[in-house]
Length: 139
Image (cartoon, rainbow, N blue to C red; front, side, top):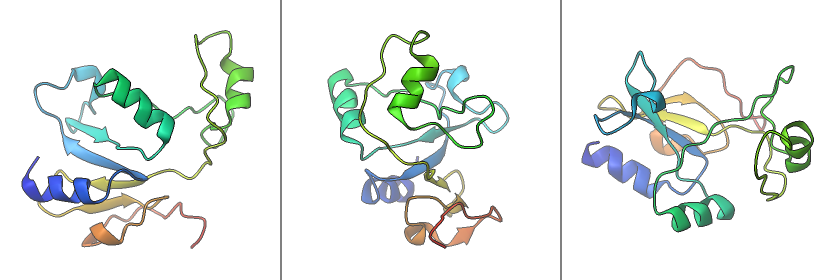
């Protein structure tokens, strides 16, 4: 990652962003996009996620929970417990997190590209915006 990408991430995190970066050789293959050799990076503002990261002192892999038949990601801890309670060891009830996705910023090229508008303000990255519809319900 070059210095300008590092500064953009540092100045805008923690927050509601996912940054697409070129994967290095240290990134396990199963964690990267096979075709583009990229990885998504988040630095969350959620206090539970931050506490877990602090305790682990390591990066943590996570995914969006899309249950069969649902159009939106599941973020209600009660619903998650009802659907997956017997399949997972632990569900942390941190409250309802909302359903708006993160703003996705591609930092694999020299200029940042807003791939998807979401909960994070895209203004700091607005040099180039991809032709992906906004998911921001306030617009």
